[in-house]
Length: 249
Picture 1 (cartoon, helix red, strand yellow):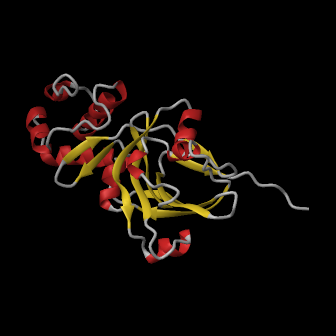
Picture 2 (spheres, one colour):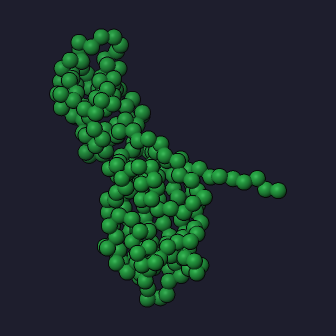
Picture 3 (spheres, helix red, strand yellow):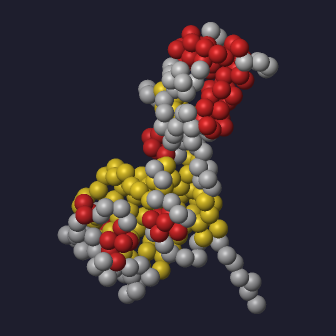
């Protein structure tokens, strides 16, 4: 950590209060790549000892960087670097998968599986998906990434005859379904702003209390049958949703 964050040199840095010198040192280490996304900072006490400053000064510098979104505190784990992600725009007039969106931007899509399998449906899933009494539901819960950066939390439910083997999905759900000639033809989406729960902020690598864009989708087959119900929580610091409107006569 001494190479990435030369705390012993802090007292020799010219100009400004100590908390600002420390803040700039950490920020420069992130921008230069010496500190990378997901790296843990030393404990505040260790930073204070190494830099010969007070813990109050350390706390002030870290608080400012947390407010900027450059660092995130994780309860019981410590303080971690959150590298800013470029903002992305997603149009609302075309039905695409997350993987297609990322590849179109020249980024590598990925998934971290949090849960998947076949389950007894909830009453809401039974009603929305039009399931029979003995049908089960395939549920997929995953953290979606782009170039290894967390972008969205996605929860998807499908009838078991449409997705009988959830464990067989590697990355793109729509790609796997299209190999069986199953493809959504249209979808309804509902978008709203929500506050993330503590465990969701930790997964997405954003500060506690952060907001997200919640996109709830119901997708339909060409026959009109509901094939998918999903809710995705997109990082609000990375995603803009854009709609093209036409002027009525």
